[in-house]
Length: 388
Image (cartoon, rainbow, N blue to C red; front, top):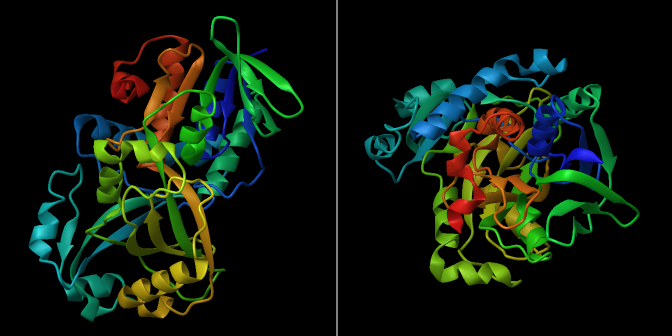
């Protein structure tokens, strides 16, 4: 028997398994070696500047300090760097009004004129913007970082297995005692779910309801190209968080428990990031479709992505690339769900991150201390119980 089973070997599960393995025997499970998950298609951004409350400012500050030394700790290159984030302000918006929305952030971005923005990012279409905001932004290659975590986890004695979890195992009094796969049962004192966008439906299948949701995120990924972006480009007036708020209103909550619903209309936030090997990811469309396997018109989505990014960064519109899609988890209040699930002893959540790369590393460490030796009051505000 293991002390912990962690389900999901994306960036969240890998980080948590690594931290837990410093103190416990841990089994890490995933259905595939390289699943088409949010980790696979992440933009890699670490928005450590974006804390707006005492809690998120503290976690972001802890997170960036960990990232700055994580390659050395894990003995592998996460490709960590700090880049210029350029938040474009469309020609229809007042730059001063948009900038005002950012004054309460831990590190407020600097407002740039159109000319200054184009000097920072020469690929910009000057006619498409009224200005921009800029701030330093962390960046990693998420798949490399995940693998670095897993390799360090295994060096600590952790065990990784590729297996599809069919359901959770319970004893006669309802305590979660492990997981069942098609070929084997694994027992543990505790089970942690790091299953991202599939968490809600996975738990619903075993009679557990949690207030976690998901978007279908769509993007285009290019092969390595000679074209070079100087910055990470995103819209200053991003619509994703408004979409998440709209899709979790009490009036539409019931829609999430049945398939083929769309609690809120889709949005498109046009942005692009380039990795050190020259690949570019262009995104993103976000859809709140309640079926995990909802059918999406890839050709139509790709055309919309290309048209919108072409307005801001014209040279990217026709660049060779392939449409991709994954699920991204979120909660009603933009904070993750971390901790024991009420009424289900032995079962824990570590999921629903809206700003994952900035705060997963410190929360994985805090969670381990919390369950091992000393209760962490900070985690109370992230408990799944806050929505019950």
